[in-house]
Length: 164
Ligand code: FES
Figure: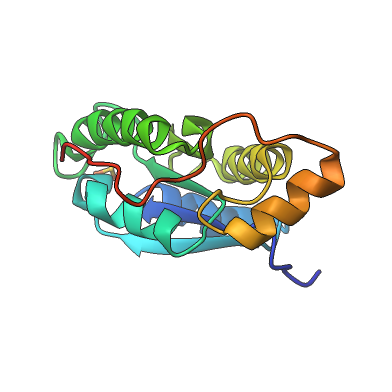
């Protein structure tokens, strides 16, 4: 199956658990959408708020951060920090007029290949339901028109100030 332009989904996956979980999903020949792009990170604690915002700025329609289960982080508290950062970015996205559901945090261990495939399907379905990222104005307008929708909320405002 070939990836398409929409949706584009980025997953930040920690080296020790979720990336290995993705590897296992592949070894088990589990099917998940090819639109998922995986970025290997040493720990989800390494994923900064700016990395996530940059992904949306680049046009990804959904982003997820997937790491070790709470209490299992190889750097002790990296995933706890990631949970807080993801919650913060969700608030910021709402301020910018981007649906917070486009971002999620998951915990997938190296032995949970099937769960990783489910995470990918979940984010794919969310992105399809929400439509193109509002940052992609033309694609968004075309999608809204195809849905017969009337724009009744503010689009992304480049002058919006964020508290980082
Ligand atoms: Fe996996 Fe920290 S090492 S989340």
